[in-house]
Image 1 (cartoon, rainbow, N blue to C red):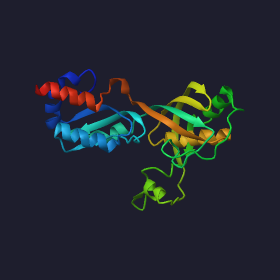
Image 2 (image 1 turned 90 degrees about the vertical axis):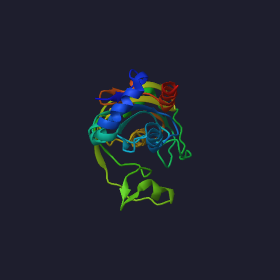
Image 3 (image 1 turned 30 degrees about the vertical axis):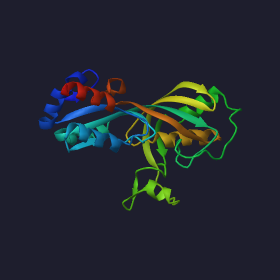
Image 4 (image 1 turned 120 degrees about the horizontal axis):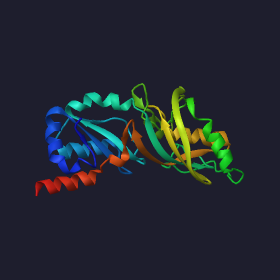
Length: 240
């Protein structure tokens, strides 16, 4: 497979030439405040390949691994999408937000002084396995062809059907209340924002996703991914 990673970045021109004929894949480490579409648009400009798509959206506030397919490899996007995902997230307890993440202002503030690391760990483990999850209203899911987040921004909230997803594991990285950092491995379709919200609800104090980084998709790790600035720097070196 023709994949651009940290180890193959120096051979960008060779990767690009192959991508224009047989297709290619890029492991991108997405920066905060970029949309997944921003990444795709930037890569179209760099590579001059029109047929480019990503294999699983990351919200603008999230960072980490985004798999991008070019040319003929866009046919493999669904294969990448089906693979297990891994994330590191910071959950803030004692408050909720309308978006279930840090994009909106905190509301419904509650004390977390009575919580302990043990009580948080016990609540977190209840979400390992097959769980029922209601998608956030601020999501790209569509109702009659309209993304839910567009309805939410107009103050419209509709009933969402619960979905069955699978959380393979949750490891507590650190707890410094009201913050707890978790490593999560889960199936396609799992909303980490919803998981943070539901953990907070289980503890009776509310919660939201304060930070998110996707660390892996299947066997692909963010440690092997490249950033857009690194690609631009390599492109400039190649043209000198």
